[in-house]
Length: 172
Image (cartoon, rainbow, N blue to C red; front, side, top):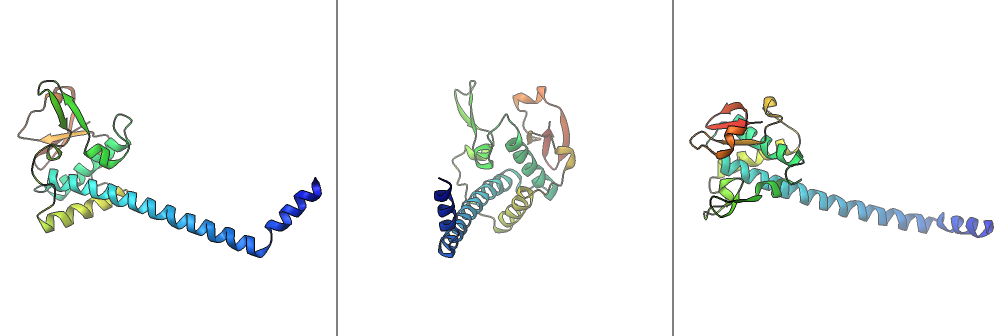
């Protein structure tokens, strides 16, 4: 039995086998990297769309804050664990007797295609930076909610406001 094992190990040590193994591992690594990059691109695009539609007229700190809340939700056990699912998450509203989007722009009949080039470019840049760890608003590290100051959502009576940026109020 010992001789069979030595023969097998010696066979594996042949240069052709090693080269084939290295080539296979390289291809697997390359393909895995492509999948990861595609996933990161999709996540960044969903985050950028949310920043664009939710904060297009807001100061840069407000757009970073929107990114922070979105990513905080991804990190929370209470919400889906990827950006696209958080952005497009729906919940049933008994008062309206229908499902509604967490972010209002995901439930209207208006095209989601960004039309303002500079605002889109800026939103994408903020999304890319935020997705890769840049956070501008440290006091929002636990924030999971926000709304525009001209609306009064039902849930605000149960939340603690932590910061106002532009026309948005942020909550833990």
